[in-house]
Length: 291
Image (tube, rainbow, N blue to C red):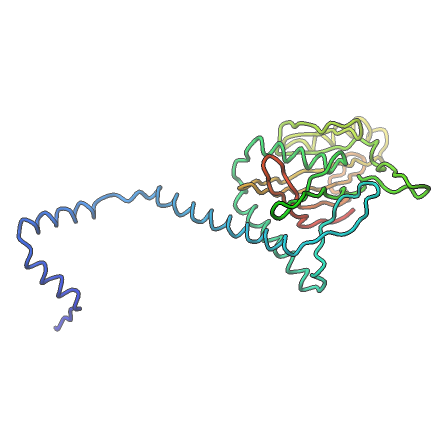
């Protein structure tokens, strides 16, 4: 049998023959020691995860920049504080609109994929919840996330919670929900700091049984006396926070008699936020549905 050796192997063998026995023995001991040294697998995994994390954050940052470059603002006037509406005026074809939506959904996917199941910083989560509840209740609104040092713009009101122009004069009329009690179900929290406002009043049910408690109380107080009474509330879930970004889901169920689980739905939305200092700013309404 003929065995072929590469040039590097032959050179190594020749060099080994010229090494004194003492040095050869010392070198062999060092090689043996290095080969037997245990690999710190935990440290290796931590380094790889850190690299993966930085790569994901870099991609998210690039997607945000691309998204904001495409955006502009709709002119809504200054009557009755309508707020600002982010639009994409150059993306008029279905393919272009799909492209913008794909960017928003890609950002959402990174935040959810990286942050789901991770502990939420308590102070950041509570501040974000306060923003969402205040916005959904029509008490106050978040600022839009902006590129660079551009002056922030306040978001539009959600649903029917904003003022409307008075058709009989130059003034504004309050929201039709301004005197209502706005009910929230918040599964992921035990309590919260309520927005300060005389109207509307905010009421919340917390924890995994919050939805059930809201139904039971409504049935005792209202539904048992009026079977046609509707329970309307805002369900805030899920909420995911990752590296200064957050995704919040909101649904607005409408149930009859206080006991109907599969009642109609007044809509919902998925909001993407970005943290600037201690402030949560609205980056994108990734999707919305219903009224």
